[in-house]
Image (cartoon, rainbow, N blue to C red; front, side):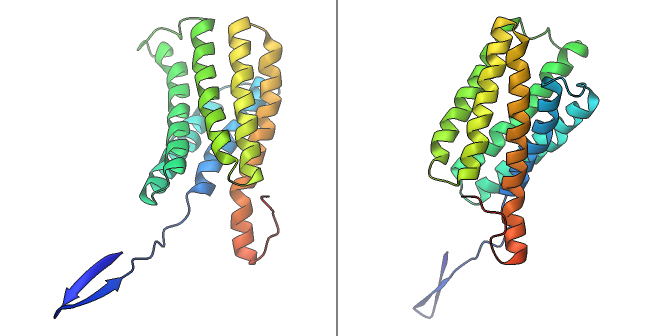
Length: 199
């Protein structure tokens, strides 16, 4: 809002925000690479350059961009969530690439990787608590994502592959839920009515 003064008269000019919402981009940035990573963890597909490329570009760049868009709108929750997860995907890619390129040693063992994943699980759990004031669809996405992180942390800490496999299947469900949560408002807006409820 801006106030203009002219001839001792004041007029208020409202500046309307007409920028697009960042939620769809941010959720797709998690959902699409998340489904592929979940399939790889479940042993259904092989992990490779396709997942790495999705992690960097759709995960990292898309989510970080969505975070910047939310910052512009004054949405601290959205900014912190999308930007942080965008940086998660970048860090995930760096963990894989830096040892191969000779820029750093590996993660430092199972304990270090477990701590990395558990920390992201804690961050996601806190965001889940915040989402209790939001849609059921978003709650489901964040709740299942927190479970994925904690299961992967348990798998890394114990060396038990079953934790990672279960995390993979839950990750697929969580990723698909994120894609639905991203696209539902778009479809509802196009059709002018609720055809894909968010709860």
